[in-house]
Length: 453
Image 1: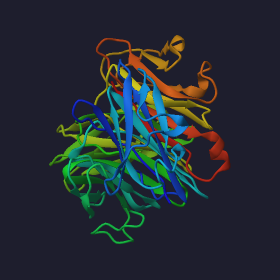
Image 2 (image 1 turned 60 degrees about the vertical axis):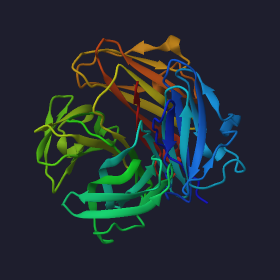
Image 3 (image 1 turned 90 degrees about the vertical axis):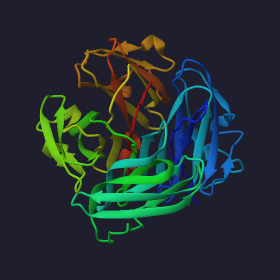
Image 4 (image 1 turned 135 degrees about the vertical axis):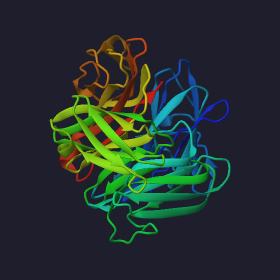
């Protein structure tokens, strides 16, 4: 049986509640997942993890993996990875679940998913702070060069609800998907490699975007994959946009990596989108109601090779959402462009040779005030250090294998702080497993957005 979970976060009543949407990815022969929770508050957090079946039945294991009791305590800055295969079958049978995480202090979380078999799939994405009755996916694929989306929708409302997904392709073709009676806190999964949207045929090739609607608040995740090669790109949907967006890391021939940037408008009318890269070069695309999204491939859109950031604006000003995809052969990863930053960013999980996994994180100055930033790995306060000063829109990358003070097999949280008053930053995190890349067929890389504090 498949055993997968994925993640969403939402705030309810006086506690911070976080729900984890199942990643019923139908990826490999056996699918598993984990989610990492970080306390980004100034006080200890008492955290309880509850699993919700597709039928809405709630299970609360008394013990998680690593003999961790449930509930458990996280001190400020601390994180814990809930590895679902490590939970005893007697406490949590194999199956497909949503998860609700309740905490007495502010926490954040990310989810990782793995499809195991002759070909491996790996994806990661950040959780949510709330649900909404309308959600947007800037990049959705159906039969596009072998890629298919898997759209997971979690009902975070108080009653069962119907869900409609409307996909608009770059050429204006539309397709719809529907689900009825999704229970509260449970999820429905639209697996496009085995489900043809109404309005499409099996031969339709679509590279587009989507709108998800429901009478109850929902949250949405897209796990895109190319089944033949294991390529996997996972990202969180957005319930709102911004007329200015920031992408911390775009690649053109960067150690073999290339990026694409997918943008969708979420209001009626026409607008011209301008992408200003951190080297001051630009790209543009025109969005209309008939074709509300566009995709820019960095090897053709950007002149110079390397790592660079981008600022995305529109004229006339219009709310936009966007995601960045990156690929290197069979490796693929995705993160969301963001509309704002904060003075401090929480990173739930960084790794250094942790079961073969290592991490880099890239932070962007998303304001106009130049600033240095301080990188602090949880448990290594004495090794915190400042970056060089970043002008507005500029980026800096931190590669954990280059951090000599971190021991091998390290896994923990991190905090990045802008040191100039009024400055704002936003960060994204990349994972890769070089050992598995060289020995196993499939995708061994993934990305997620860090969290504003």
